Image (tube, rainbow, N blue to C red; front, side):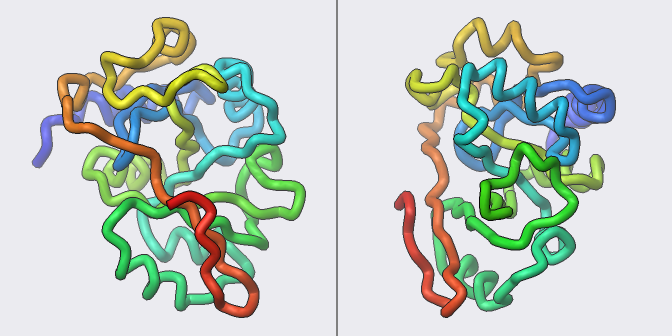
Length: 190
């Protein structure tokens, strides 16, 4: 078992209280909150100095969780995701049960099933989806490592995860795709 249980417990306290966390994901370091809590999502927009028209990614722990929140789901997307090697975020339409301010104008949201051990454990324990947006002020470079995260971001969250702070393996944002109604996959970010 990975040594992140204390971090999980602290994150759960913060997430349940509507707070923000700074945490390692399967891609870059992210700012996270309860994806069902509109006030918490607003706090992330304010911290990142980001227009709320630019939506954020939601992390889930399993296909079952995606099926719980997406009403217009083509199950073939899960077969597609098994063929990719890079973490891949899917824009789904017909999303329910998430904060309204995380949804696009068309009711869509970007969701990634996260396989990174810390994130997966946190989401399972929290039993709700978690927002994940890169840990940077809007229009500033996305930090590749914890050491690159701006002090303003660190100071603006309620808890900073200790796990993987010394990890210097280069990370990059996920690929982003949209599954069209006809079943075609459109690559938005490779």
